[in-house]
Every structure is written in C-alpha cells, then in structure tokens.
Image (cartoon, rainbow, N blue to C red; front, side, top):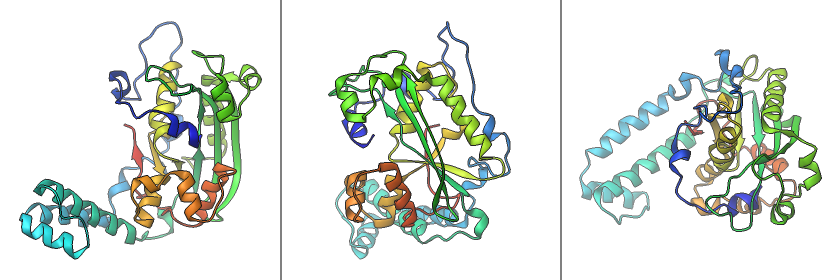
Length: 307
C-alpha cells in the first residue's frame, strides 16, 4: 500500500469528496446500510468529548493568545531564540511560533494516569484498485481490508483480521494493480463485496469488545486510508461512513512530532530506514514503530479527523 499511496496524484478534492463522509448517498438502487453500532457505548469510546480536556491544551491556547499580541520584532526575537526561520510576514511568523510551542508542549505532555491509555491500536492498511498514473477521474475501490490488533500493555500483536474485497466499478484489476499490490484477479473474484466485508470487520471488532469494554484507536500510514479510500468506497457502496473511522492516529504525524522532522521525512520507507528496519512486512513494521514508543498511546493524542 505504501507505493500505491505515493502513486496517487495530489489533485484537489472534488466537490463530492469535500462533502461530509458520514452522509448517505442519495443514489437509488441499493439499500442504505449503517455500520455505527460500536460507538453507542460511551464509556471508553475513542470519540470521547474529553479528548482535548487535558490542561496542556489550555496552556497552548494561552500561549497562542500571548503570541497574537506580540509585535513583529518580538516574534522574530523568539524565533531566533529557538533557531527557527525568521522570514515571512507577521502572520507567518505567528503561525511558525505557535506550531513550535504546540509541538513542544504535546511532546512533553505525560498521561495523568494509566486510564488515559488506549487499550488497543487497530492498524489498518487498505489496498485499493489503481492504474499507472492514477488519473484524477479514476475511482479507487478497496480490494483488501486488513486489521492488526496491537495490545498497548504488552506491545504484542493479539489478533488479525484480513479479507479480500470484490470491486464493483472496476472488477477487472489492471496489471499495474496486480503487480503493485500482489493481489491476483482470482482472489478478488472469489471475495465478498465491500458491504459484507465491512460488516464482518465491525462484527470482529465487537467480538474483541473494542469501544465497549476496551478503548482503542485506528492507526494508519498517512490520511489516505480513511479520508480517501474508505470515504470513496462508502459512497460507491452507498454506505454510511463508519463511526469507528472518523478519528485515527496518523503515524506520519506522530513520527514527525516525536523526531521533529519535516513531512518529507515521514514516508514509511524513510521512517523504517532511519530506525534500521526493512520494508518487508509493512504492517508488522508499524507494530515495531509503536513498540519503539514513538507514539504516545494516551487518548488525548492528536489524531487526524475526516469529519
């Protein structure tokens, strides 16, 4: 999936893609379904309203207010003190200083107690249909739905879920897609369509008591899996966007914040190389990144959101 994500062109989102992912498509012809039962129990839901109740966020807010009142010369002096770039207009300097303070405060924030930790991390890395060059009008469909369940107490893989998916719009995989993903035409021909597989994934998570007895978060390599591939697939399949996927940990952001490196150095291959790991077994390598504790596993950590 790593190469596939990098192969997707960075084109502006269409008007349809900018609509809220949770809305059900109005297209007729298929029964509308919803897969949002997991978040009914609010005891340990990952969408808890207390995510940003930690005092560190109040500190960040107060700091931002102070920065807003600083003059351009004061801003430049502070940036020089922290060895940051002093070029740009006043608003740019403000943003640069705010981002620095936010990153520093979140980096040094400690969980107040053990209850703030997620019990599990669900590592997801979709494979989707693709063509060489991936034209802007091409519709990506999920063809593999894998989940690795990581226990944050033991830092061991506790279980896995894996299903292939039969695409609907482009049922015939391109040679480029087969070579890139390693998924054969025969595998998807024999697979269930996405609504069935999504329900199986939800049922699996319920069996693991995720979102009820145990708290958890989704983890992905970048935002493509949830904000693009799952969003597009739900519209194609006329499904409500699942609530468990409205919030996730972006390992690229976590790595970048932890090691204080720019975005260009947070591609999975680069991260693994810097940590002395190889690219084979990508999802298992994500587990090892977590085991290296580059991810704060408390529920107030900054997660990407699509909604």
